[in-house]
Image 1 (tube, rainbow, N blue to C red):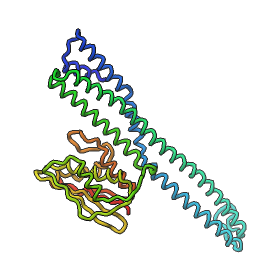
Image 2 (tube, rainbow, N blue to C red):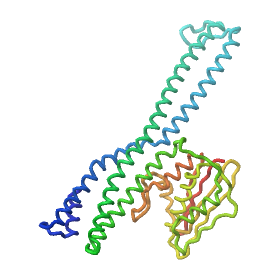
Image 3 (cartoon, one colour):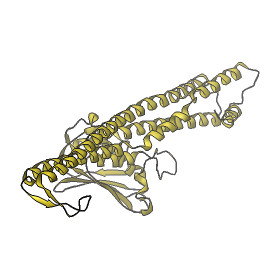
Image 4 (cartoon, rainbow, N blue to C red):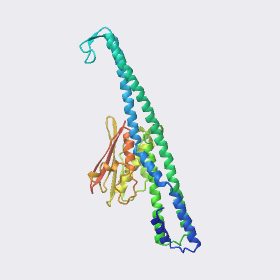
Length: 353
């Protein structure tokens, strides 16, 4: 633990060094120090792992599969072409035998050699594709393991703080109790951050994609009933919303994050949030509109980046909107923002039908 933090805790608790309470406090500080053991290293490892986005791996997999399909079509066409070329002769292009004629058989032989080379390249790409899929799985597994290891010391610190409060109920100075509460709040924020990183890392895992028909009115009303909303804020939804086929937990994440953000953005005496909907030929188009404080245009791209936040109070983890963007793109959609400072914000997004 940082020496300055130890000094501040001792200063605020103001315990006589010759008493049993002081010895108990030393044990407490030692326990916290052990809880932090390797914490920063593990968190750095997780951030480095997350820098290789599973979305990037998924896109690389898709490109390799598409390339493999194109190569197969090329080989099939070359095979068909050799049957026709058997009866023809062609001028050989610039090479070792410039100006000489090639029979159809000779040209077919050259094409066969090229086909064999293409086939070999295809095999190598298939091996690379398997390696990428394996790396993708290992990355997800690693995120789970590290997330669990990071949460363990947080639980220990939270438990120790709870015990201190219980053992010294009514005895702690106001400043000391406030500092313990501040530690507790930061522990909660770190726990949410780790959970967010884990959610972000598994979005592309199709094995976790449990799709079913979703009644969007029921889903959004359920979210509104669960979220604490001040009396001065009203949320309206269209009378008609579609039934879509997708993973309910992922669609719920989109709307819950965006509605929560809209609530926190309200700075007016009368807050208004509206769910928008429009059916397009190939997409469902939704929107969450608020009359809050708005977002400057220079931040419209930044807010979708992981670990980026405009929260002055530093309560936000900076992962919520990056998770929303990744889920939308998982369903082949797009997300964008329209906002004017002091007037309000609308988050638009589409989902492939």
